[in-house]
Amino acid sequence: MAESFHKPNAIIFGGLNTYSRALAALLVPLDGKPLVSNLRIVDKFSVAPPTTYIGAEFPKILAQPQVEYRQVNLTVASAVASSFDPPDGVTPYDYVFDFTGEVRHDRTEMIQINSTCNVARMIGLEAAKRKVKAYARVQHPFYETSSSNKASHDEKEDAKPVGTLGIWWHETLRILATIEDLNLIVLRIGFAYGPYTNYGIIASGITVGSVYGYLKKPMKSVWSPGKNPNNTIHIDDVAGALWACAEWMAPLGRKAANSLAGEEIIFHNEKKKVKEVEGMPAYNTKLIAPLFNLVDESNSTLLSIGQVVTSFFGTTFEFFNLVESTVLKLADDSVEDINEAHVSGWVDMIQTSHPPIPNTPLSAYMDKYALDKHTVAFNSNKIKEVVGYHLKKPHFNHETVKEMVDKWKDEGSWPNLD
Ligand SMILES: *[C@@H]1O[C@H](CO)[C@@H](O)[C@H](O)[C@H]1NC(C)=O
Ligand SMILES: *[C@@H]1O[C@H](CO)[C@@H](O)[C@H](O)[C@H]1NC(C)=O
Image 1 (tube, rainbow, N blue to C red):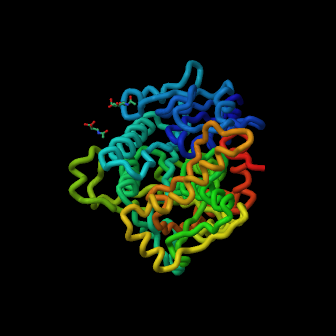
Image 2: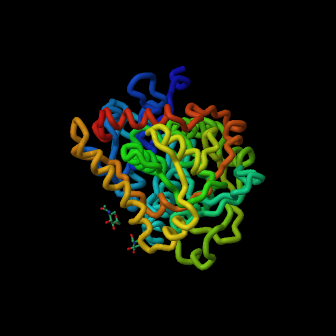
Image 3: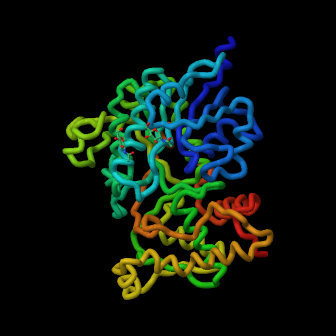
């Protein structure tokens, strides 16, 4: 009888700097019943004192008795293996949530291979060896999809990985897919946003939008309005969908899951790399893994996100005219030119805040990636139909922006100018 009351236990690897804290908050909520009996979180960062921004809520999650945090160098195989040894009296881990990987766009190929591919491969191999029931991997929207409205945007569309980062994150999926005994599910998300999350282009857009509101000037983009889908997703849904995927996978196993939801993970790399990278499958190996897209129902585009954010801060979203944007795109230091206007505005806001803001994890500096044109449109019908997942926050709107800003204000990360 006792067995039927057994709640699964779980390990989260990586992602403190992105979205894993939202999953921890779902698994062991501060108010409400935990979904797991035991949660271990493993990442390279220190949490006390924090060496990355973790927000005001996460230390309270960590303080709960069934939660354990381990600072581990995940590039070391033995450290990965011992991360799976449960504490005394605890059963082996049932679920693994993999948020690992280097998310910075300015990192070299070698760093991507070591920190994204190799780390995930070691965790995946160990998870297969330990027979974990579900291994859910988060895949960021480092892709370019078709901008045509006629395209399906479903999991069968051959989305092109963008840049060094995109190529190696995508390769990581192929590497994981080769591990036959791994109960792998890939959750491919849109541009995620939510409370206590400073990572990503949406957080950046919100910060910069607030500056233009403060300056009472329009916020302008160099990318003319048109087909620039930038599909979004709330971090509560990233967390909710990961959990739903794990619960879906556990009774099925990989083979059955592949036949219900398997997709070919298409080769998008240079053939010569196969010899250079350990564990990288040959270009012509057909690799299948269960893959689900996850975006909200806003059909967000650059324009719609810009309009939601700027109207929230009392200004407007506009586009540079053709001459202005051509000049900006051609200039070597266009990133600096564009940033000049709002970075000093943000500093001004921080300095005039009451109470003062001694430290903020938020920056109004937009790097080249944040300023680049993105074309990401995914259709997430499949996860709704196959897994039965229902979105909790289907719309990117004033309410969801307010939720973020209010929580940053409460913890003293956001200027208070009232
Ligand atoms: C992690 O381990 C690798 C391999 O041993 C080492 O090169 C690297 O410096 C370590 N990183 C840290 C932050 O200690
Ligand atoms: C990547 O890993 C290889 C092999 O372990 C090591 O020789 C190299 O120094 C690492 N490079 C970086 C940039 O971490």
